[in-house]
Length: 133
Image 1 (cartoon, rainbow, N blue to C red):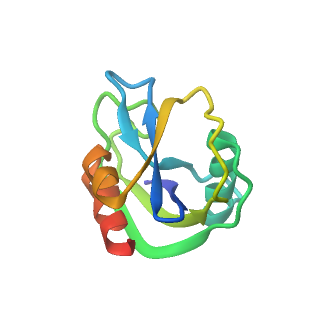
Image 2 (tube, rainbow, N blue to C red; image 1 turned 45 degrees about the vertical axis):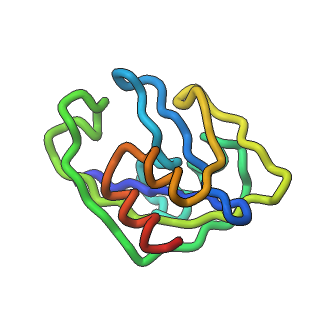
């Protein structure tokens, strides 16, 4: 099983949704990535937040872990045929902050909850966001 961390970013009453570009056609998602060896899920969430959007902020664990089986088209190690366990976190962005996206993403949007829920590609993060909002 692969272990990942997912971070929902909130700015006031808006939610950050990022467009992941490398996959076929791309899709809208939250910031996420793998937990590296000797790293906690919270440390991975904070690192991914910094790497993918250039936000140095604390993260708060959301007690709503999720798991999924990767699609065949997803890159390794997620596409290795095994399942993925995901721990979810919340980060608060300053009111004037805008993300500086890394190479994995080509667009972002600040959305009201309803729009964010409509945009998110994967149902599992959508369910978690609905539960915390």
